Amino acid sequence: KQEVTQIPAALSVPEGENLVLNCSFTDSAIYNLQWFRQDPGKGLTSLLLIQSSQREQTSGRLNASLDKSSGRSTLYIAASQPGDSATYLCAVRPVRGGGADGLTFGKGTHLIIQP
Amino acid sequence: NAGVTQTPKFQVLKTGQSMTLQCAQDMNHEYMSWYRQDPGMGLRLIHYSVGAGITDQGEVPNGYNVSRSTTEDFPLRLLSAAPSQTSVYFCASSYRQVRQPQHFGDGTRLSIL
Figure 1 (cartoon, rainbow over the protein chains, first blue to last red):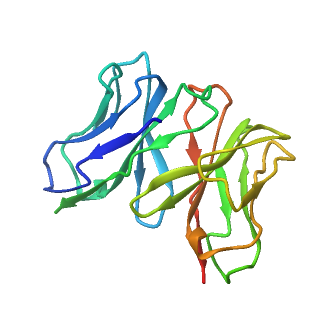
Figure 2: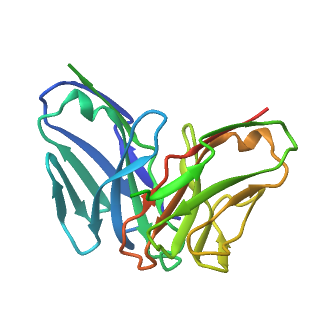
């Protein structure tokens, strides 16, 4: 069974720092990996989607990488801002089940950016 | 520009009551699904549908019922609510192709007393 782990569970850094959030998964047979942001009491906002054949995706100050063979992904946030404070979720779409089984999620990294 | 719309946003029920959580999308997505989010557990798949008239069970289907009569709507029914079903429920949709991104609603926060 696919399992997704996110480290660290929580992170607090001063504004302006560059930071890396980690995601690992146990089964490399995936279609893609998606990073989400969740604000308190809110829904999930998709940040980046990386297909299994891709190595990285970029959007603004965000860069996500994927090493499928080793079962790892990182989300890099450049020049962090207080508005980046949120919980970041990593999810993979396993090949097992033909993709119909939806996404397997990690438990998230709770990020606080101190002004 | 509605995307995925979930209603209600909040609900309190008594044990044994029934209710339906509504989910609608206006993107003509074939694939729709329901997740629950619990502290320390992450999101877990309850039921999913690959198109109108087709539904299947996810990881935690017990106590929930679904149907898909139209492409747009995918309601989730609690037949007899239990305190263990206190959770935040999210509906998601996407095009059927597995490489398409999932789009999520804002969630329904459900408390069972």
